[in-house]
Amino acid sequence: MPLLARRTVGLGLSLGLGLGLGAGCFTEPAGETSGATDGPNDTGATEDDSSDETVDPDNTGDPSGGGCMGCLDAAGGCLAGDLDQACGAFAAACVACDPDAFCDEGQCAPAPLCNAGNCDGCCDGDDCLVGTEVTACGEDGLQCSACASSSTCNEGSCELPCDSTCDGCCDASGDCIDLDSTDATACGSQGETCQGCDADFACSRGSCISTACQADCDGCCDGAICNTGDSDAACGGGGLSCQVCPMGTSCADACIANEDALWQVHVLSATTNAADAGGVPWDPSGPPDPYAEVTVAGVLEATSVANNSTTPLWGEVLFDGIPTADFAEGLLIEIWDADTLLDDSMGQCSVMIETTEFGVPLQRECTDDGDNLQWTLQLSIEVAPT
Image (tube, rainbow, N blue to C red; front, side, top):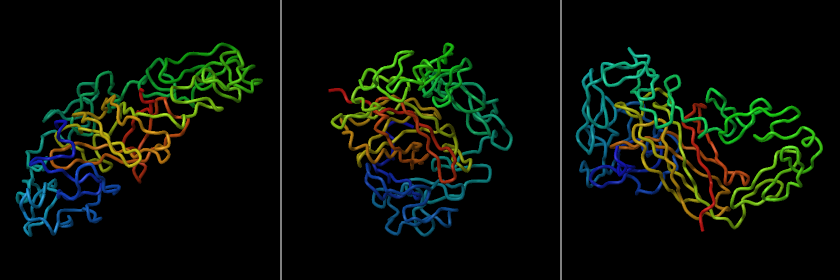
């Protein structure tokens, strides 16, 4: 899927951006969102099968006039065009695919010999592979994924390296010890290699500090030294480890974002699923093509498309010069699978940013109403260069 295809299809027509657009009909100009949350079509009806799909009464049957990016049923209604029994694109008549075929991007295609019914690993075309290699990772008969550079394949899922996703420390096996779970035997932060603390030392926020200092210090501890904890170079209290405040923040018992600071949103990487919560692959013919949209104070910006990946590595900067106050309502983040006809939402979540979370790597998870994990995103809010 080329980068230019994000939310845009042939004939130069832009598609609706909301999660709620179920039929392949033009309803909204590019750059706007509908505010819907999941799955229903643009009238609020839920699609169960082709007979229940919403018909656009204004569709003319002309792709340049009516804007139908899917297919037309017998009554001239615009359908999504992605069902085996109603497949098509660009206002062509819907067709029912043969029993040994499936609908792939609006076209009936031969069903692969390898599928979930006969493959426990992943499918590379018609071949069933084990699904444990970084070049061919997957399970349950889904299409194999090539894991991103430096990623690993763990039980059929591509995983980003520990040092790029862990807020605590990485043990000798490369597994993450969460910051809240670090202790004197495995201490570290921000993906450092776990280290053991000396005798009479404890692990505090990923740093080894003296237990005597921890017990007696009203400020913060730098090893065995008690500091007042009120400077940007050694900030903290309650006998916890001292922190160096990131740029754009100042010490006030903790490192707090300055009210007059301006910020950027750094979208680093993500881990997504190869299929939706029902087990249906995002892309029948291969891994998804994810991109992320971030909305701050009503302004939306998006990353590029990461083709054929469940572990996209973006490392991209969105926005430039966002005031601290604009983060008060948090971020609205949605990850999409870019498709030829209509992009699929892989999950939308509101993400709150505490005033103590500016300038440090963050990780956020997004779950659906059934508590199914949809994606995990790594990001940071960094001060904008002057």
